[in-house]
Image (cartoon, rainbow, N blue to C red; front, side, top):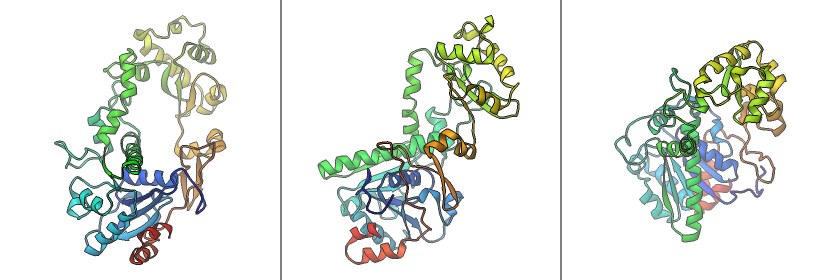
Length: 378
């Protein structure tokens, strides 16, 4: 997107106190949609892992990056000056850490009563585990969101970071921040958003709960449509790669059997005979193991079987459908996913990934000029 171009979140200003995982992703998501985000990367010595240690962190896409030592009086004052012109703040510390730094909600909202203060944690701001360390898998294990991943007899193993950090964390924080900003613009009063991964990932189970109410989900793993049936499953192919089918509706199931040459097999005639699911699943596994993934794609992709190959991210980037939609692109030496969602069918071209601290000088000069608002235009 070009400087000055109008976007969905044009005019929204966010201060991000950089951390790991869902907070930075949330801030990037807002920046993708046009918000002006200043990422405050902590100065001084600290342990950095993964993307956070890179000179260009992909999660800083579209942001202005400044390095500030929050443990100094000067550093804290710089952040408070930024807050004076901001709509929202994002922080992902353990409960109480921002207060000890002198940057808790009360202090920040005293400077800017309309500030929406977003707090991103795994366990939440209160409760017996609030101060304990944890990671994505711990949070979604406790919330119930990990329980159904995998099949009977296998250890539950969800997609890395997707359910907790992103689904239950970053995206719920984004909704909370935008809700708070809308309310602040109507009332003149900011709010504190407590976005906990245990809360968000539990809330995500509501759809599954509706299936349970309809009798489609059992609390015994491996006994439900999504993890025990032959028609909603993942199968290994002759080349060791995998495909998925989700032929739940009768007409889609009939087409699956036709594609597999099993339409006249009595053993598959009753789709919803749960007692026969394990046997039918075993038989389909044998059938799928006779051809390569590419051969199954040639036979089923694009049909109403409800079919897709299981692709790695690099394979997904090259897939014709994903390429046609421009879902992935390469920039700054990085493979990146394009912003989502789209508005009026238009694909957003995100701003680049900055170097760590690239905007420190310009932002600090703007703050010292006496007009904090200009820091967002550097």
